[in-house]
Length: 120
Image 1 (tube, rainbow, N blue to C red):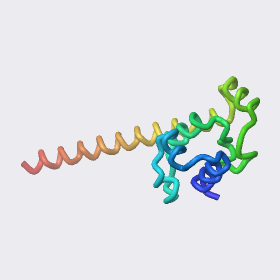
Image 2 (image 1 turned 180 degrees about the vertical axis):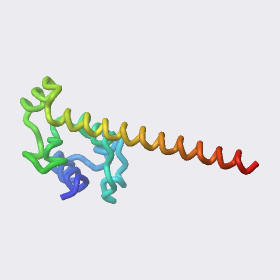
Image 3 (image 1 turned 90 degrees about the horizontal axis):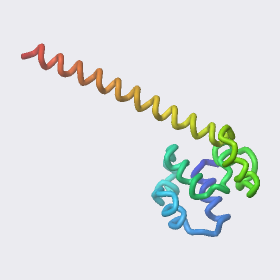
Image 4 (image 1 turned 30 degrees about the horizontal axis):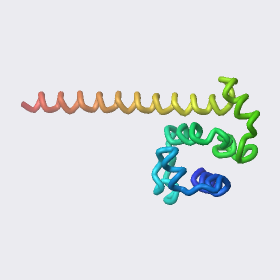
């Protein structure tokens, strides 16, 4: 089952509309229905809007769909909880890829400028 399908299942279990879910998370309804990839920023928004959603279930098929109140409280107290670690890893990878893309763009721009200057 994809993340999108799981989110739709979660929405159904909460007995809320997709519209209400997307308003609370800032996600577009089309992302859910079309099965487009959901970025880390949207996953963070989902986690913040619905802390009872078990991110291990959503991402890794581990555990139950929802967390108990006790698990939610413990997760908030434990900064090294697996979900927190996953979030940090995702953020670090995004930052790393952005940095690499900026460097590549910068190098490409320098090459183009150099070629233009050589041709004058």
